[in-house]
Length: 110
Length: 363
Image (cartoon, rainbow over all chains, first blue to last red; front, side, top):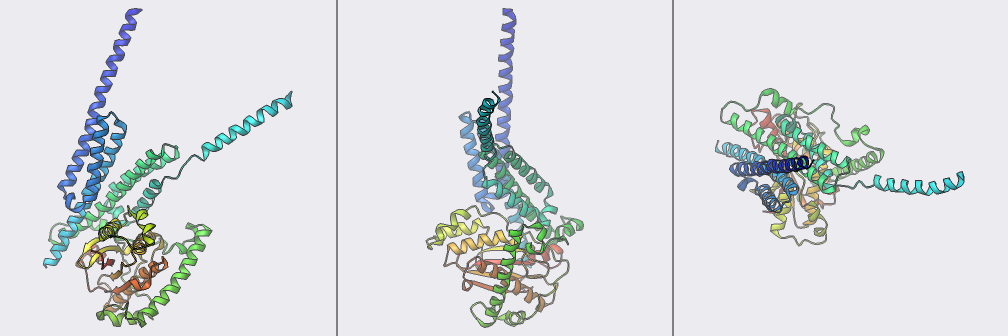
């Protein structure tokens, strides 16, 4: 009987460790995804064409890092979602502005 | 015995009823959700976005459903607001993606390279549905009685204002168009609205539908006095998506705000933008506005001039109805004399059919 209890307790501890191990890469993946989205926006020229959107994305990313360090994972994840969305918007605005500017320059040249 | 039991149970029933009633009215108004719904509705109506960025638009729609589900399930307000914010941003992404697609396509064509978009896609993007109501008032089924009366009253006032403004244009030099189109302006008073290309299209490549993030902040306090610094004014204008141009901050409205080939505004589409512009103008009494309307080269020069003059006047009238002094607004119709793109393709013609709102004393 005692042996059974010990086995169950060991199993529970093991499962908890495994679950927490699973949770960590996911959190890391969220950060990586957001980081990539912000980088993509920067490459698209967001610092020039969409500084406001890029700034919101970066701010949310930084806040998410701070919250994750304080073990507030849920809130951090939400901020990362906003960061990704804003970075995608910054990228889209930059691409659109860049295309329009190029078109205008081309038309002016002829 | 039964009576005593009834007496005991009745207060309990009443109390539980009140409690349940309390729960039922617990749903609170989430401004972010309304904001997201409005933004999505506005953007999704644009055929260009629907055609050129349907994947992004679908993502926005799904996100909006998430937000509405959260509201229907009485989740915490901040949770609903979060989902709604995501929905709004995703709708804006769709809008910008369509803009980029459209411009890149024109760029490819201009460079003599393989067009980015197929003819079918362009046709779908530039087609305005036949059954769409011209004005909200023309579609009574879509509105409640109160809405109809309100719109009817607005229409009557709009007609009166339009007539007054047209006569004002004839008599006043203050808001006369530039000399090159003066004769056309005079002609436009008495002429009916010109017919332009029958398949005129909606325009989204340069149009603005983003909500002003600072709208609430900018309206109330600024109405009392003009204490806005140039930097604040610039931020306010940027919030309604005005961008620096050679003549001041400017924003471009696409043709989709007008009935095809006419100067009649689609009230439901234009209202939000006009509200935003009126909000900035009323908050900055020294700020002036130049409305410059343009079209493509598919109609003859006179018709084009008349149409653009009438369209500029329509915008002016709508702003005057929102409380802006008429003498702060100058209108000019340029016809097809100032294209921003060649008129070679449907998309390029679409880019040329536009109304520019320029704030000359804001840089």
